[in-house]
Each structure stands twice: as structure tokens, then as C-alpha cells.
Amino acid sequence: MRRLSCALIFFLFLNGPVWGQSLPWMDSFTDNDLAGWTFMDDEPSRDGPGLWQVDDQALRQTSNIFYGLTPEEEYAKFLGTHIHAGNPEWKDYSFNCLMRSEDDDGIGILFRYRDARNYYRLILLDDANNRGPFTRLQKYVDGVMTTLQETQSTAKAIPVGWFSVTADVRQDSIKIYLNGSLLFNTTDAAFSSGGIGFMCYANSGAHFDSVRVTSESLVYEKPVNVTPIVQ
Image (cartoon, rainbow, N blue to C red; front, side):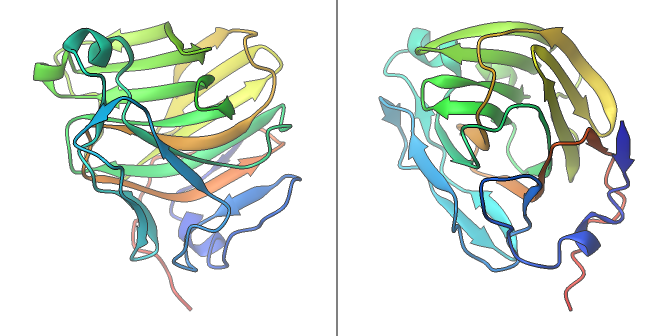
């Protein structure tokens, strides 16, 4: 498995997004727009709508939107708003990105995304009032959320500052890396293909950048340089 130092990530992604249906696919938001991305809110929701925008060459979500009209609905799924891109026919790939959260509520990635009710996701949440902190690898199948693996402790789930996340999916194998270290390793066959995306649950301070999807196995290391190099 190839590893990529995040000191090089911003250098590699000076150009705008690479569109198309084949891999590799990448977006560093240097063009300051959301071309190729589609966002939607999970209904029923409160404190919406979701607010996705590109600011200072990074994708941001600044709404406190969260799903559910009752606590039971809310805590069963921890949804709010999400954005997705890519090809629904992508099968085996590594999805790498950088994320940062100025809020302690849910932030995460989506992969093998089929539609708003069918995908895999990784969610990180710190807020103890919302049953955190926890990190969960989950599948969402026909609107039913199932946890495949989970870590829960008194420690923070969301790293401080920018951090890297990788989802490497090969056939029924799912491996999740956080800052270059293996976090979850399991198998599941609910979805064999799909696009990628990001999600927020009641998180008004979410940042995303340096998106890269490759057919080869690739893992971002912990970021050591978070200042974009602009030429």
C-alpha cells in the first residue's frame, strides 16, 4: 500500500478538480466552486438548511442542521446534511481527504455512495451531550443505520486541527485509516460500488480539502503542512 506524506498534498493539488468517470479523481477546491458536487439535507431536519460552500480554497459546511423530530430519531442515525460526488460505478478504490472541525458534533466521510439512503460512512463525534465521544464505521441500507465497528471512550474522537482520513475498499474488504494509522478493518458486502462524499451532524464548523480517489491503494499520512501552496 502506497503512503503519501501530507506535507506534499497541497503541492500535488494546485490544479483544479479532475472530472470524469475514471480514476484517479481529485478536487482541492482551488477553483473556489462546487462543480461536480451535489448536496442535500436529511429530512426531517431541524436548524437547517445545510450551508455548503467553498471558502479560501476549502470546502466548508456552516449550518447546525441535524436530522430527526425526536431524540429517538436523532440519535438512531446522527444525520444532518451531506454532499457527494464521483461515479456510482467506482468499485475498488482508496478515498483520501483532509478534514478539520471547529465544532464537537458529527463530521465524517461517505463512500460507495449509491443514494441518500444507501452508503457506507465513517462518523466522528465528541459532544458528550450527544452521546459522544465516539467513532463509528456504519452502513446505511434503505434508510436503516447499522454500526459495523465502533470505538468509544472518554478521549476525543475528532483530532485537533487538520487530520487525514482514508477509506480503502476492495471487494468486501473495508479499511479505515485516521492520520495514516489503521482504525477499522472489517468485511461487508452491502455495497460493491459507489461514489464518495462528506457528512455533518449538527456541525457548523466543518472543513474538507485535498480529496483524492485512486484505484491503487493509497493512504494519507498525518498532515504536517496545512498551508496551501498557491502559484
